Length: 89
Image (cartoon, rainbow, N blue to C red):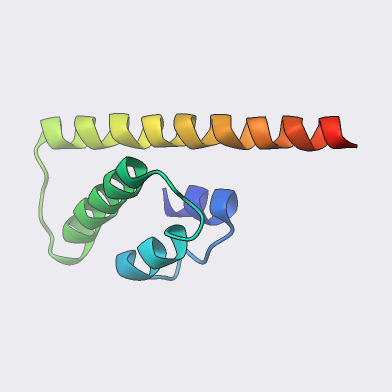
């Protein structure tokens, strides 16, 4: 997810904290629900990585579905932008 954020939104996500990522995204991602969803996903990942929390299988499934939905939603917007740029040329 961090790699996607870095490539899609042109932010330094791989080596940033969740708070730093969210601050950078606040300038590029206007949808508040999407911001909340990505924050929740990143925080869960932080807990699993640094606090050694083991999420339930159902939590993993929900997180994966939310991540896919986020990518799908933001990818569509990117394609729309690219199509609009092609029309202008």
